[in-house]
Image (tube, rainbow, N blue to C red; front, side):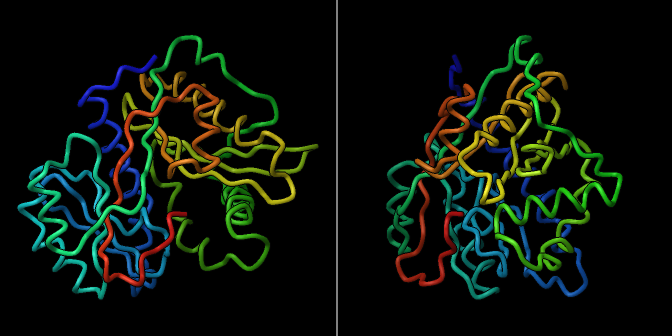
Length: 277
């Protein structure tokens, strides 16, 4: 059973930040930055902005600490420069009454919960290797293109995903990232990725093609990534989900525990808050 400590919370939060920097960095490097991606550090916290990617997590201030209250002016100015208002994700122990009152004074209120999950890995976890899940050689452009096809269809349905692919084609340069496909009767039906950062592994985004949902593919992908993390020498695997999302239940069934539940704070006058997923 996972015993949650401030150290565990810090590992989860920092792993998320590093993962998002690696994930969004290639978007910002495209000529003209068409996705409007920017991120900047403010004390312990990192502010992310992805104007053309309407996902709340990509447009939030992460790793907020009690000291973030001293950077609120700068954070608000950073978002205002791009025509946006900040969204704060605040874990337990990182918000006190003066900080909360200051957020309220500036017009922010808590609207949602975002769960951080984790599992301490054991030698037995290294034996996890579910059938029908294969690792993709991302160095092979054709193989990675196939992974992108399945991943993006799982998220967005069939169609032209050329723009999204252009954003993601630099992902294979990220050392420590591994990509997986789950199959049904030989057909690729689900996709997922794992980000290994030293002793900590993060189960990144995953998706299932619509016609294959409800067949346990995400359970198999979660199990494979836990096994891979253990075989890589990690002692902790982390995940996340907005509260009660099906992804949260899949991770819990695989033995991940709720490490903490963050409050998500948005501005009461912000009519352009991206959805949580």
